[in-house]
Length: 304
Length: 182
Image (tube, rainbow over all chains, first blue to last red; front, side, top):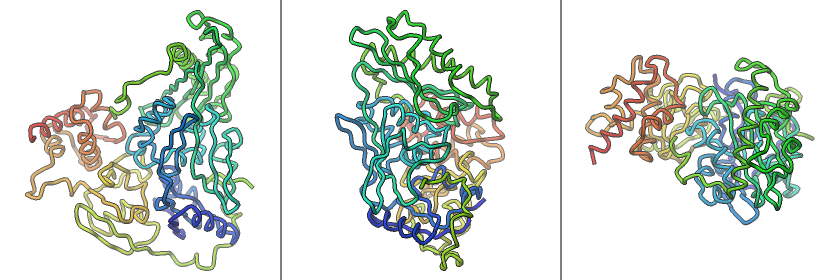
């Protein structure tokens, strides 16, 4: 299993990269951008994809930075999952990032794979698209026409498909922080830790000024039609956290989240996971909303 | 215009470019196990094949070739990566350590290799190079793993012989040996 031949390009800066992508598109060439390659290279080796041109951005300067501001976390296109997972400032700003990254493949894959690449790959079983959608983040897309922000709600148009133009390069993803009074959680079930999730849930719970349950949202991986979060507030809105019927939120999710069967799980089993994992995630998110931002111990997740 | 899924039909993508007919070759210069190596290879050469075919370093094994089994794991600038999911051209200028590079200059085994021997952590040995490189890098950062940590450390590598119990013991034994050295 080897990739089919391609023309290899190694631009040194963003300007050169987007000029190249534009030029290749203009000449009718099919080009793919290579960052970590942890999803792209397997599909090329399996000959599921045979791009004529490969634009390797690993030598592009300035794309490997994690920037944390009061508004959110900006992740350059060459930031490896593992670097983001270890970034203390990013963790402090949005603990959901590290909590979720610990479920992204195995550490060896995270050492090379990039978070922005995973988002652009738009695999319905991937974790980071669901997180970007949950926090209302966006991707910064560069092209010869300049830069534009593509919100997650417009980015993910289908399985393995985004709204980025063929000559656009995603140079960064921005994850806004969550407002005070909002807790988050991510849970998933996989056959082995680090494998593709049979089902996963990213959830947030927001409390109102009186500390009662306000808004409950959940986004799904390996289930549902898109990573876009659903509003599941109805069964618990206005309840006190301790008395809220979180199981009813899980049951609501079972009803509204479509599931499919595959070799690892029947649709019915997957729906059972949707219900159970939703309940777990929203319970945890609610208690974190109540207790203030959750603080994993700093070395948590570094066991791997 | 949308950017199609990479699984999408590429036949719609116009005629090949006029220079596309000849396979492109690139010069790749890497520091491998402390030695600088420079070879001209096809642009599509995977790092795993670069090591095995072009440098004849056959200690790195190739199992699944799509990132699942971990047999091809090498250290890229000291960090474990799948060499079958890495293009040689993409890591031009970097430093690679293979299982051959873990052995001391006098030929004595690396503590992880010694631990695999002590604990009977291998049977057929096919997966072993990937385990050894992964664990060597893991112990640098986590010198004192618990049993649970040890299992987690090797969860990205497949072994079809041992049932993993002796590999888990080898991780703990390697940690002991490493500490004993200091």
